[in-house]
Structure formats: C-alpha cells, structure tokens
Length: 211
Length: 211
DNA sequence: CTGTGCAGATACCCGTCAGTATATAAAATT
DNA sequence: AATTTTATATACTGACGGGTATCTGCACAG
Image (cartoon, rainbow over the protein chains, first blue to last red):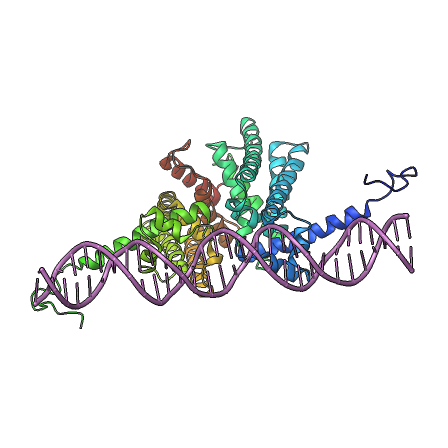
C-alpha cells in the first residue's frame, strides 16, 4: 500500500532520510518547548510561543506531537532515562562499591548540569502529566533510587560505607545531585567540573564509615 | 467617619473581633488554596475549586485577596518566613557552632515536615509570582543560606567543622532539608521524629572534620 | 417593624489558548 | 507537463477561568 517504490535493490541499506529529518524536527521542538517550560512553567508557556521561537506555527508542532502533554512526557522521559542510563553505566563498570559510587555521582551530576532544564522541568511539572504517565515516571525514579540503595547496601556489607538507613542515604544522595539543577547557574562562581568534585567529596563524607 | 460608637471607654482595651474573624477567614482561604496548589499546581487549581471546598463562592475569596497571585505570595512568604524564623531561633541560642547547627537542622527539618505543602508550593511555583515579589522571596532564600554559611564558617574556624567550600556546604544542607518536603509521605515508614534524627546525623557527617 | 449597611451570592464578561478544519504552495511522482 | 502527496500556514472554535458588576438577604439600629 505504502510501498510503490522498487524495493528490490538494497532496500535495507537505504538511509531513512525522511525519518531522520522528522526526528530532528521533533528534537528541535522538544528543545525549545523545554526551554520555555523551564522559564515560564508548563502552563505558563504557550505552544504559540514555542512555534514563534522556531519561526513556525502551531499546526507545525501538532504534526509532530499529538498534544502539549506529549511534549512534557517526552521531556520527563528523557530526564529520567538519561539519569538512569548514566547510573547504569557506572554500576556496570567493574570495581569496588566505592569506585562505582564515585563514578555514578560523577556521571549523574555531570549529566544533571548539562541537562539542567530537562531535569528541572521533569521534577517540577510531574503534576501536569497524565496520571498513568506520571505513575510510570515516578516508578522509574524510584527504581533509580533503589539502584543507588542497593549499591550502598553492598558497600555497607563490605564495610566500605556506614549509613544508618540505606534508603534514607540513597534519597539524600539522589536529592543532593538533583538539587544542583535548582541552584546551579551556568557561568557562576564554580565551573561544572568543580561542582562535580565538591559533590563527589560531599557524597563520600555522607557515606564514610570513619567517625 | 467609621466610628459612631462611644469611643470614650476603654477603646484601646477592646478586642478587634471583626479583624480577628477577618484574619481567620483569610487563613482558611490560604490553607485550602495551598492544599490545592500543592495537589494540582498553581495554574491547575482554580479559585472556583478553592471556593467550592470552602462552601463559598469566588467573590468571597476576592473580598479577602486582591487576586490569585496575592494568595501565592502569602504562601511563599509564609514558607520562607517560618523557615527563617526557625533558623534564627537556633542561631540566637547560645552554644558552640556544633550545638547551634544541630538545633537549626532539628528545628528547620521539623518545620518543613509540618508545613510540607507550603514548602513545596513555595519552592515549585516561584515562576508564578510577580517578578518583584519573586526577587524578594529569592533574596530571603539567599539570606537563609547565607546565615547557614556564616555558621559553618564560624565552626570551621574553630575546627569543629571541615568543609571544602562553605557556600556549597550550606547549599547542600539547606537542599537536603528542603528535599525532605519532596519525598516525605505522612504516615510512611519513618515517623517525623526519626526522619529528623536521620537528617541530623547526615548533616553532621557532611561537616565532620574527621576523616 | 422599618430602614441601612455589609457580607456574600448570582450571573456575567472577556481574554487566552489548546486544539482543528481548511487552504496553499512546493515537491515528488507519473 | 499533469497529478498526487506532503508540509506548513491561515483562520477559526470552544472551553475555561480570572476577575467584576450587580443583586439579596441578614444583622443591627432606631
């Protein structure tokens, strides 16, 4: 039905240029929407404004996203997905719990600074997601904290860490990293690399067994 | 003009019942609005809904508040005012920096748990305040962090604390406390008293000089 | 029991914005 | 060149909600 083209020659090898362009446009919309949602809030930002900044019109957006909520969903999913991916990479790396925790904090904090707007929007606008989607995102967030908790428990069992309550410690660490997105000002007193190091040291003190 | 009553006798001693009732009603509106802003977001919550929950109508609200933004302003001001008051009380208490920090964390964390909804709304909805008001609130928030920073610096000078960067440490501590409002679930695994103790210990590890 | 004032309700206005039906022009296809 | 498809714009609708003009009934005064 859709395929009238000669699909005999090298069909699988042909690049899906159309699809790539389409994905690129989606991405542009997402970036700009995220930027405005960050600055003015989800409800405060209008799709007309997003369109204007892209020099297009609203129906353009609607041909790439079903509705406004779907854009927010993609922002939120991106936020938690990137965070989880960064954490997973660190957790899969071989090494002691201490080494893996250090790597995790480094990676995740860096990601949070680089994607500040996504992270803030994702954490702040949860209530504007459709209930089902919100539940899903919350679950992923909990899974993130749980992975951190497991790492802490492992380290505690080996005597590398000492915490009173691993769940609380995991929450504190993920909170400390997330919090960065709220106060960090690009071009501020400290460059990202230094913020990451400070965060890393703070986290290590939080779990340190020496007292 | 307004006073046709005999104001010769004990005028100053007479209670301002009208004013008290009025203040009480303002407070009721504030509570309910905060509750809805918390659950549905500032823009998502309508004043009609607030009125309905109070079994009154919208004009009732408008005779106590000039507009919706003024309600949010009062919520935000209450949030930062209570926090600052709790911190000030602790800071003014005589004692070593360690003792004062412990007292401060205890008081502030307790307050944050007790006023969870106010704190969340105040932190999440800043962008919906009028610019001038938002600036003012932000300044107060910075003053809060600065006081904490001063205490940390004092303790560090005396060798009670060891932190790499007092400003960063202050931000981390106030962030850790604020973060509680985001994850704490009343009636959850830990009662408030235990959450406070865990927070207290975590903060002390964060500033601990021993390594 | 009759007037006066005020708390609060009823009923409305009006701007905004998400979402859409339809038009148009360019590009791809034949 | 003719025709279909695709991409995007123009122009509209409908709902919603902040804010308000106006009415009503009750408390108290005389």
